[in-house]
Image 1 (spheres, rainbow, N blue to C red):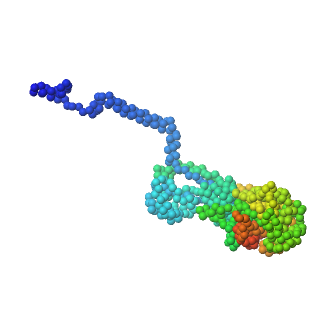
Image 2 (cartoon, rainbow, N blue to C red):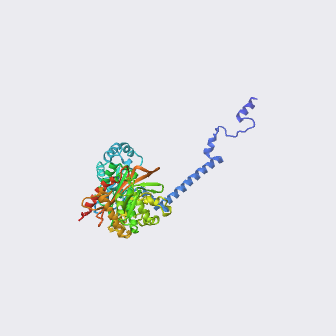
Image 3 (cartoon, rainbow, N blue to C red):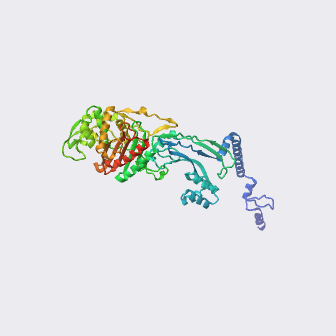
Length: 588
């Protein structure tokens, strides 16, 4: 038995036969994988070999693509990555007034930016930016610590400040060529000129209206840069020069404009009005010598500008004109030969206009006999209702079109309002009566001025305009002139307007040595509940030397508790400036 058990121990368990040579060790399963004995090890080796082969083929393919197939394209991309481009902004054309004074021009400046990767001392760089450019300390610290290679610090920086900053010779602070608008007269005529954006494009006023003339063609510059974004001295350099924009000359007179702005600022303050506007025009040509609204703004600092203050209200706003409109109504009736300055009317103390009773400002309680001249001199509302009846609704509507009311005046300025003029088919029982004394109708001051040039200029209306020449070529506006009433009718209306100033409601508008023809206006402003007391549009329109009119001034003060009397002081100040600047001689 012992021998049998020994054989079993030598040969393994019963039923098995171990034929390994004596002394051979056991082989672990992992050894089969290393030696490539079974099918699994062969499969894995094949996969690894396939992957290696595919990678080799892909690499060769890429190499062929880079070196042969798309070689030029990849070279161009690599070249672009090491070239930095910048726009060379064209200078906008210069804007001159009628006497050659520069109102707006372009000056070279720079946009300051940083490449944080080149900055050696962030604290030193930030301090320099704060000291020279006056920027916020926190912003300066953030911008010099950025992760990129380019960040704007401040745009449109004056050359002097750029030079001061450059003298500090701080690596990473860089300068980009740019141009900006400068205004030798400061904010003078800001609403007329308009504003220019960072892209050097006009965004309002005449800068926007004539942007196609003023804007030139930008150029471009490319320079080779290193890995950090800095320019390589002696590297590739390519430049396409900019082409500057064209110059324009305006009809504006800087001296008259200055007087107008100062006068309106004072008038608004003195009268408590919300807004005030003035426009000065040569009625024979349509040249706008001055135009402004108050409050105004500074075009060199748009961050402080209110949108409403950027509006030139003589163009963009519409109002009920009030009694100034009576001059146009008289022109209608005289042109129709229905009346003359000497026609007499029995003028009652009040008249019914629709469902409203209309009175004169004197609140008399009796009927008076008045001539048309007297109606104008007193600015009688009840008398004008009678004049309106002589005209009739159909003819009234036709003359509104002859005066160009309800349509754009043709002024070369954006945002013109056409007001509210009812069609003849929309007239109701109050329309004719209320429009006869300047209510129930809304027009922009520029529209009214155009119509009134027809009164001052022998019945021929001139189109108000700002542009005199562009790129050295004069602009002819004479073809837009249009007759509205006869020369004789205009002459008779002017005569009555002279009476208004000489001895009527406009007497405060007299200027020693000069004949002034004018008409006052006080229109109650309409609110939600109807016309509001102590909320008036006070106005005055007048022109000097009626035989040879060269200056017409129209003043409006919106939202004042006062009557047209508050429009007289600014009128006189502005008219005196026009007389002086234009060299208008006193009456013989």
